[in-house]
Amino acid sequence: MRILVEPSGYPSPLRNVGDIAMQQTALARLAQRWPSSRIDVLTDNPEQFPFYAANVKPLSTLGRRLWLFGMLRNRRVPERLQRLESNLLQANPEVRRFLSNFRLRALPSHLAREVKSFLESTRNADVLVVCGMGGVADVFDLYALDLLDSIKLVKQNGKSIVLMLGQAFGPIAEDGVLFKSARAIMPTVDLVGLRESRASAPLLQRLGVDSSRIVSTGDDALEVAVHNRSADLGTGIAVNIRVAPYSAVTLKHVELLAVSMQRFTSSKSIPLLPLPCSAYIEEDDAAFIRVIAGGSAKITNPGNVTPESMIAQLHQCRIAVLGSYHAAVFALAQGVPVIGLYRSAYYRDKFMGLAHLFGSGVIPIDLSEPDWPVILESRLLDAWNNAPVLRPQLQSIADEHLRKGRNAFQDACRMVEGRFLRNEALLS
Image 1 (tube, rainbow, N blue to C red):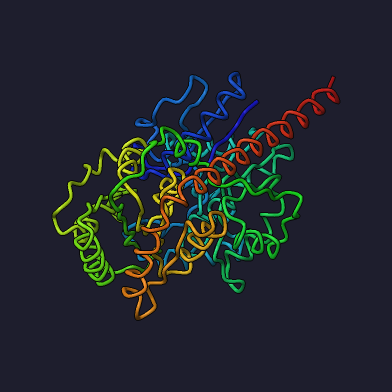
Image 2 (cartoon, one colour):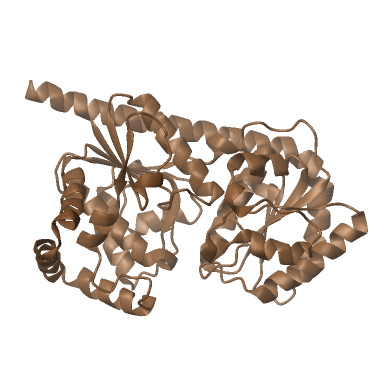
């Protein structure tokens, strides 16, 4: 059996704790279940791809980029122009097909081989597995369109099963190109595992996905996050903030957060503990956590951000104030209550989704509200006082969602094996 994997993050080495944990979980599960199968994992850097198992191999995304992308898809080109070109190609599939074939014939032989390798993988894949992510959303529309086009390519071989596990969807504007593309392709996906159902499930219904193909699983990162829990309640406050275009958080918000956090920690004489989740240049958590901590906290070298280092830091925490979704997942898995900071609709859905799963252990705060610093200081005290009672409840909820995720994966495997056994029986 041939398995093609769309991973949680392309760069290698990965520099986001959530991407690391979700990719580890998916590839370990696949390799253990089907040790004799060929598992190709799309990656931007095949030469640096980490070892997971003997049958897990990297597959360069270069071929996909050359086949699917327009001529303007380049970081040096403004995104509005890339988006305009992408929309035109989506609206004119015949033109797109002509341009792709024309470019293939014009490419140097070594690049043409990359394209042919990608197309061969999609045409011969028995299973496409899309690892946990929140990538099908307007804020990542160019990537989402590429992912949907890849699913369409795989489905054209007439035999492939597509599994999307540990997913969150949206927000997606219903008058946009992405919604139209998702409306055409998502109903062909055989199984969608949702890490949050509050916003994603209604969106999938509007996209025409049959409810029988949707299952709630929790986040795949829980497989790593629940390990090595501390028996003792910590005494500090973990802090993280995500400053990126898709979060809509600015330096001004970071500075106001610094004032509130330093005031609260000083009043209780407790440590402020940094919890960087991402070390990518375009969203380097550590740089903004330094502003919040005011130079009082030692921050892990960005290159050393790992699930293990995050868990070790959370052992020292009683509560957490976080702007990163996966930092919150790791905190909740340890039993640490979370105050989730959001400003964009994308992050609103993330933290509201976690609150839907973990109840009062998650307190979302909207940074677009003018009095949010006052609200934060009140919620800090509530979370601090309630932490001992919430701790076992949160751990139990995390364990239950981990169980659901494992069961959903096993059900997906049985569906795959059942279909291929039937096909083999028909052929014999």
